[in-house]
Length: 534
Ligand SMILES: Nc1ncnc2c1ncn2[C@@H]1O[C@H](COP(=O)(O)OP(=O)(O)O)[C@@H](O)[C@H]1O
Ligand SMILES: [Mg+2]
Image (cartoon, rainbow, N blue to C red; front, top):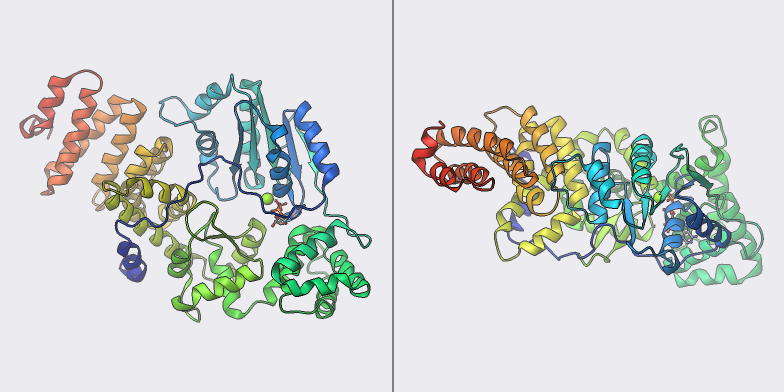
């Protein structure tokens, strides 16, 4: 089934027993703040006031304007601390709105083990707590966020929610704050300060551009051209590594004049500026960098270089070149490189940049092929983790798979639509993740969908059924666990696989033992007791 991707497979399998460097950032913690933060004093004061007096505040504005960064700065102040903490949920990697509540529960540290609906559980958990919840990047699931936030606010009087979203939630008690670009007028503007900081981060030689008053005027012009949008300024600043300011002003002028034509005039002006700034960065990339940018857009959340190599190589981009080309994209600020989670180098793209890459991938006609490679890479990783779980590096596997959670979700979603047998095999291999790492409801959801979609003869069917049984045990639903244990036993008895038989017997036995029937548990654990079921 994975033969086509044997290259990827071998790489993942060669990591057998080696989960890689272990990350250590717990979910829900505030992401690390970049060193430079420019301006926004008035906005910060306003948000701090609102956080004292209101319970739902939404920062809106175009992509790249600085909503997430401002939210992070606003809540990072100790002043904003709440007795039960400040929790950050990044929703940008989440595609499936049905996983929203789980993501919030997981971020605040609520292990979802009950048979009650999770939103009820979460409301009850928050009811007597005082906390600040940040939902970052909600625009792709506005209705679901509105619904969940409404329920939570109603149940938890001590809860405050700060949202970032390109559009408001349209919730009755919502205070909407529109975030504008940075001011770009004058020689001391915040936009210029950000442009300068980005340029100096790219090359210390850029200092000369800003220290000379004549050239500073030109730099201010560039900032105005870019409408003071932080993301656009960062991308432009990074280009000063290769270009002079004069070259940049000239090329920028030409491009923006062209783009004032009818093709883009339906976009909001600021949106247009950003698209233009990204498109402009795009044009300035080497062809292989553009190709990698497009292919990297299949990743959700952060990823490592091994995954990039396996998923994105092909055609003109050989596997051996991927790391170097990736470094080129980092130098242009298209891709961010982080080490913070203690997991070795990880890479990610801001959502706005990723969307641009994805449009390009669609134009190249490669969406399906690259998503297949992505899914099969993470399927292979899941199998390696399954094999390594019961070994001395279990904690490392736990951390590794927790970091890869958004990618695992994306891979499973894709396989459910394209290769249900592989989805079932992967969801079944992840039994330990669902069972032991606090994702029971999510695991159940994926396993049920995969079992429905895949044929009974699929190689992963029995394992999927067994894994589903484990989630029932953990939820305390022993009737479901028993029924699944019996079905597993019937199927296992028809195979010659001793491990499958033992697992089935174990599930069935536990489903009797836990509700208090050890005699029956012992009976069904043995072959004669099980024979009566078959
Ligand atoms: N005030 C600021 N100071 C420094 N960098 C900023 C500021 N505002 C935004 N940025 C940077 O600009 C980029 C886009 O900002 P981001 O908050 O991700 O935008 P949004 O959430 O609106 O899409 C990020 O790299 C961010 O760090
Ligand atoms: Mg954002």
